[in-house]
Length: 141
Image (cartoon, rainbow, N blue to C red; front, side, top):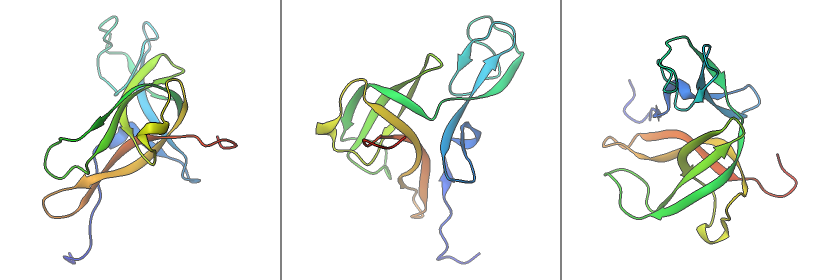
């Protein structure tokens, strides 16, 4: 393999999907027994302990619940970053990074959209990425 070619490490695995148009959404799980929806995906329902779990496509938009500007992280993470909780319409609260945003402009309940973002680099200098959210600008969605 060419040493100059960087591979992106996807930290989210199958929990994030992208359609042909580039739109990103998260994949959680839904219990066939009780209907509980969870994220990240799980093999056992935390509500009823059933193992009858199916993948479930979650909303690509949510609302900002809470956030914090983080200045300390493991080696390789881009600093500072915004760590946040985002509420999705499926009654799921997701912990994620907020990207492409000035922390001073964030507001509770503002609409955010799922995306994939580079969050840092590993020891070899290869970027790692995961799902994140970014504020929806007026006129977009």
